[in-house]
Length: 65
Image (cartoon, rainbow, N blue to C red; front, side, top):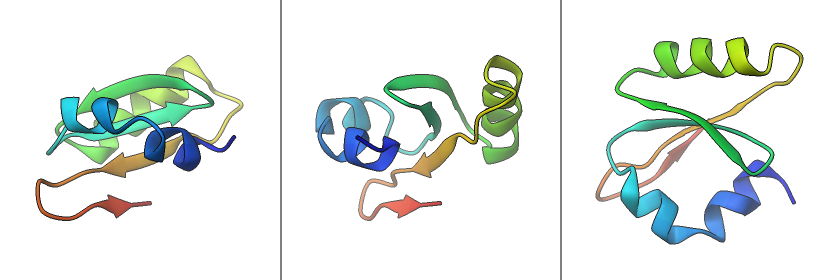
C-alpha cells in the first residue's frame, strides 16, 4: 500500500490534521506542521534514505505532492 493509499484509507487521520502539512513514510506519519519545508526536513532527518510523501489537506480541497 502506498502512502497515498494509506492516507485515503484513513480519513480520520486526515481530518485530525486539516490545514497542516504531513509527511508520511510507509504507514508512519513522521511529521506534521505549518510549512512543507519544516515537515520535509523532519521526515528526512528520521528517514534519510527514504522519499517521504508530503500532503496538505485544506478544509475545502486536498492538495497532494
